[in-house]
Length: 143
Image (cartoon, rainbow, N blue to C red; front, side, top):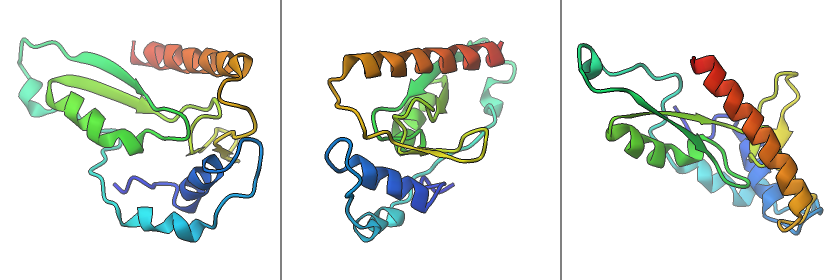
């Protein structure tokens, strides 16, 4: 699976994140289109390896959260490395405004929110609350 699974929307999210906070004068997508040439070995809804069948080893879950203006597939290498050590890794695109682009349930999509300063702690606390809620929802779904 290609890591830019949302194509130009992911690239536009990176472009929006590359300018001064609160401004929309981002560089042309032409500058970011070179990222399309990067191939990462991404797995979406991967199956549990047959090596674990009958194994006494526990499946230890890790929930991986991306950083500002990133997304889950951008970190596929790190997630794959964790999985190679026997962890089962769950990575999600957060809907807290920190993902370069994420599909939303209403189908509109959401880009990285570049409107607030990085040190705006009230805004960051709001984002942390959203991530906490998303993580709890994922844990509930896993149970």
